[in-house]
Amino acid sequence: MPNSYLEEEFAEPYTTWKTAKTPAANATFLQTLQPTIDQGIRMHVGEPNPLITSRARQISLKAIGSYDPTRSRLKTHLFNQLQGLKRINRQQSQIIHMPERLAMDAYHLANYTQELNDELGREPTDVELANRTGFSRRRIGQIRGMRPGVAEGTLTTMLPDSTVGIRPDNKAQSMWVELIHDDLEPVDQLILEHTLGLHGKPVLSNQAIARKLGRSPGAISQHKLRIQQLLNQEQNLSPFIQ
Image 1 (spheres, rainbow, N blue to C red):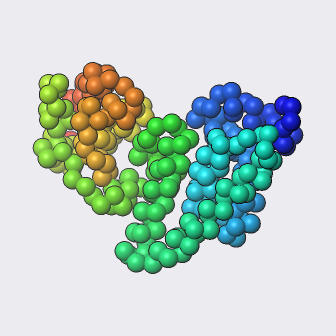
Image 2 (image 1 turned 90 degrees about the vertical axis):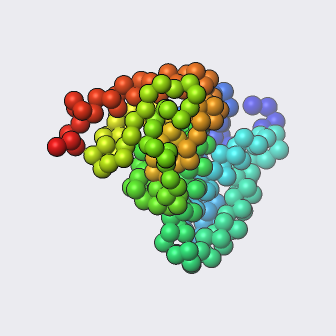
């Protein structure tokens, strides 16, 4: 790379990332940069902790997008951008009420959600959030304020392009919904979460879900019908019905 200040150790991974810029490429390049990110954390705020590391990765992902190899070394650019961690660390240190544990968990959840959003190129599912944060889905719902789900528990009847619905209005049926949720692909998990308001997720229309996932409302309807077919097997297959 002519007239480039890019360090030799980063040349190949940077070129690979620049060519692809996919969620997988983001994650791979961030892994390569992790020792440098940790060094930047220590420079600005001290020893890394999970939350600060999460925010540092978010900042670094944005930083490599604005990096110009003809103007500076990549490490220098990253260290300059990571100065923002000082403000974030102050905010983290000031969280002592709300109560303290809930406030800190809410702060963690918001930042891990953004980190996964950046890595995946879409909103993370609650399963993905639970795996990253270590929170149970019940805890995630509590952190979100336990927003109510669909009033009648219907999967599709509240939308004009729907024909069938479910009513998870008892414990056994709710457990069946969770069991089906766990077996779905991430896109279908998000559709189910935003349709029933699972784990405190906001309830969204087909159109809003379509915008979030970059698909058509008709495609969302088709996904819902397939999910509904699985949910309808409760009477025959659910282990929770006595």
